Length: 279
Image (cartoon, rainbow, N blue to C red; front, side, top):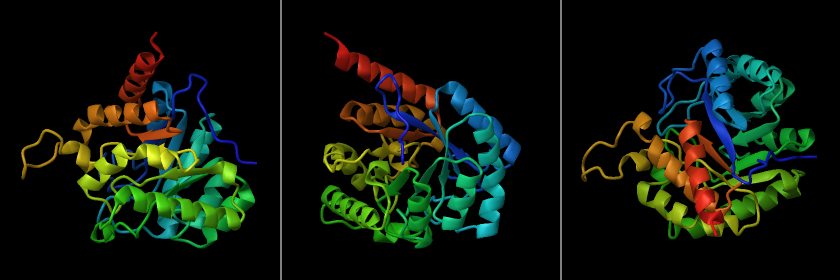
């Protein structure tokens, strides 16, 4: 049976990002070699991460997909070593075979940005394994997803599609109690859509499922305070903004936040919690 991780202090689960890719928008391949990725994962755990999300495919806008063999080569040694060291590991993949082999290597959660749509075999893998499944709002692969960033009402559209997808998955054998919904910040969404989704998070939460919020270092955060037409601040300068959005999600009751830099996010969420609990 799926058992979702939770924190004893009532804060959202902190999912630390371990990108085993040469072309990540955030860290530009800094953790591409397995040894570096494992070391980074250990650092994230030491900083307070509850869960490590290991991925071998960049999903930045315009990114091209690696071959299945290359994705496996990237992630399996990292998943195996981090799990053996006692870390709780999720596999960030859209491929059923990668998910299956990562679960066999010690991962205990699947995070699929396509929600099982990119590979029809994913649903069977997750259902058979009985593991938690993060299901994101998705409109297509990175190479052209931004061309699909058109909504009548982004919050209503995302909620409707996520709710329908969750029901489809349950009907296909995935455990309802193991589903986590992700509104998909930055995926087929322009800056205004992302801000509307942050403001509309209560509506996503009202769907009745745990919710993962992944705004970390996204470009829309880098545009805050930048004059119109100016370049957004680079990803490594977006951690304060990430921490603020994480604290916002925590105050609303999100199940988890997915971040590159754990410490400032934990600080921000603890401050938000202290304000809420003050007499």
